[in-house]
Image (cartoon, rainbow, N blue to C red; front, top):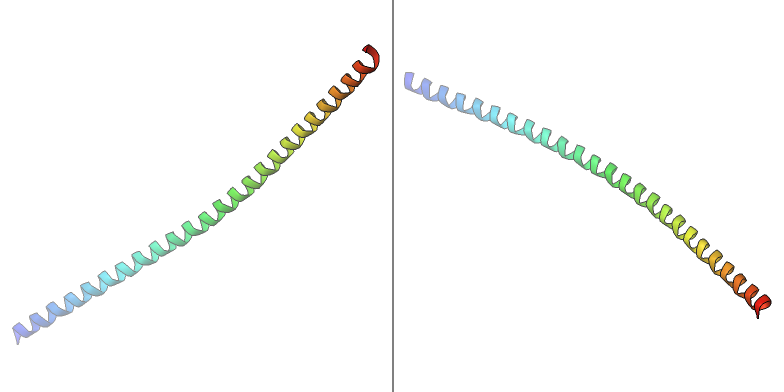
Length: 91
């Protein structure tokens, strides 16, 4: 009877330890899962910020290109006027 009691006690202790390890692993999995979800949310926010910055940069580049073309157009017009003035008055 004593030996059976020790065996039963040993099995019970092993079962309790196994349940504690299982609970610890489940808890760790929950923490890891939450950290993963947090990282996913952060990635979504960062991607949105990148899109907004890309849009702002594209808008700025479009404005710069518009100014450049405007300047080139005015310069060409001015050069045409100078050439016309030169032809009319100096030829």
